[in-house]
Amino acid sequence: MRILHTADWHLGDRLGRIDRTDDLRRAVERVADYCKSESVDVLLVAGDLFSELARPDALRETIRHWQDVFRGFLEGGGTVLTLTGNHDNENFCQTLVHAMTLAAPSVGKPGDLIPPGRLYLAADPTFVKLQDKEHGHDVQFVLMPYPTPNRLLKGDAGQKYASPDEKNRLLTAAWSDALRELRAHPKYDPAAPSVLSAHVHMFGSQIGPSLFRLSEEEDVVVNGDDLAAQFDYVALGHIHKPQALAASHVRYSGSIEKMDLGEQADQKGVVLVELGPEGRKDEPVVLPLPSTPVYEMTVHNPGLDIPQLRAEFTDAKNDLVNLHIHYTAGVDVLEDVLADLDAIFPRWYARDWTEAGALGPSLTPHDAGPARGFGETVRDYLAQELTNHAESEREAVLALADELLKEFE
Image (tube, rainbow, N blue to C red):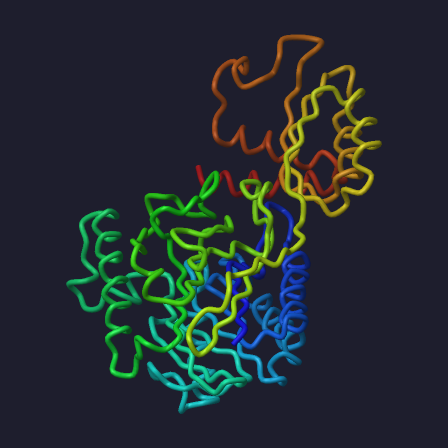
């Protein structure tokens, strides 16, 4: 059985002002191409299929895109196994699971031998079996969604905790207990080939500059020291940086796209592993995925820097850029600087600027004089952001902001 491990799709996500839908859909299509070219039997997605920023209509279009992209894979007998991550909307995913159960009411109990050619989503800890079509043996898949109180802390007593630390301790223990219970289930065969897929933070993993929209204090970290001996392959999601942990078959595949500036140096990919009747065959293989460049750019002297950037970045139309701009009043025209940079980097996702004050003292925050009020700060920010817009639009937005600020005050 050939398994393709991937995770952290975050479909429908945004980076600043940029909608990432097209980037992420291209990555999903590349995953589907690997399913075909590598004769994959099971596509295993270890959580965070959707973005918490996705609107309901975007989720609907995402599922429609799945249907188009994976129709051939499913009609050919391929199976998609997925589970929920911390960025997946629990209510939406539970509704999706219920709808899928209505379509196939006999599927879903722990230890079931499930038919191929379908997509399965686990919103709670469970395990299923799939039959290898070449050799006829069963392979067990233990599916562990991200540990949340709603999933793992049952009853009133389990939902009461005095601090975030206590909650995390309870969830860590509950996650280990749930995994232990699944392996002790009467239908679970410790001698059969088995795969664990979990969306969770394991001790010993490298998280890069930061976790994706989650503080380390909020995260639940579990100990996976014994997993390498218990499973033929461990397919992890949640940490976007691809890596192997204690053993080569305990892996984070990483996200399928660079999701923010912290991932600018990552090489994205998916992991291919093959299991036979006796377990894992050979070492897992990483298959690369091209990804969108993400970086930040500082312009110190627009008159000198912009011509150089225009010559150097001739093919930056798709790049995601965080711009930091320093300009000099009386020398540079801010509107022109912003327009020039917009032409070079049309997909800038964030930008800020500082006036160097050649005709007077520098207007940096350190020399800003008396502290400004909240309303004044908001108005100044909007005035700067709307510099390139028509005067009528700028006045309309500022008038609306004034009304809202009056209500706030």
